[in-house]
Length: 343
Image 1: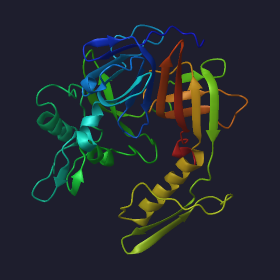
Image 2 (image 1 turned 90 degrees about the vertical axis):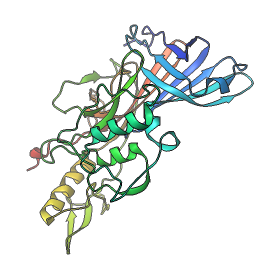
Image 3 (image 1 turned 30 degrees about the vertical axis):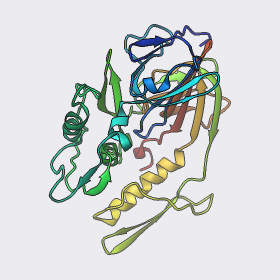
């Protein structure tokens, strides 16, 4: 795909369209964190303070006119200079974390026992966030499968976003599927709606990337993978050492720490070792893929790099818009083969 693909991004802050921007940098670091939009405006005399808290709507318009905004957020920071005004906007997840939301202390007397993740978000957002206007849309809020509850969750000074992300299902099936649930935002004309989405499956159709189609630059690295795990199970210790240790012993930590039986811990260690063994950190600079979601699977076809040819999941995404170019950077991890292939 040509780097000169049709692209006419549009930016609105409050009720005003700004055509004087020199660059816009979009960054989604993944891990269910707040996405940011960094804007550089050519007008240094613009009153940045007057823009604080204003709604930001950004249309990417890459390849065609967008029917809904690519990004909806709020101005949260500004920095003037002699030649420009730098503005930072954050998406609506900002209202669920840090100074943007009332912290929660959950105890035996005040808690969300019995609430699912979706029920908790609906209650918290309706009560604390959407009091005067709809800042976070709830029309697309759904349940995870299976639903997860907050029964037994206790703690002090917790943010709503962390409470939810800590409880998101990490694996829907240890032996057949290693997909995670993620928090995504789906936009309509004016509002970002919060939703849960499971990562795309390895058997699903995937957008193909090659040096003849999309890839402009490729970097990757492989670190020694964790192959030794030790975890306490009741009154005993489960120790698992994987493979023949070609890189020596590399201690790892299991994503789950509570097990009823040693075999459960050993199975988790085996799966974690498989994930680590096949994980490669890949970064693509591309001329396409701008609208793909975190958690989507793509197919990389690089005959000169057979070790990374195959399917990878998008873990983070950034976009730089300005001038005649609009580059997209995808951060990927190569996904593990199905565990049934090993047993």
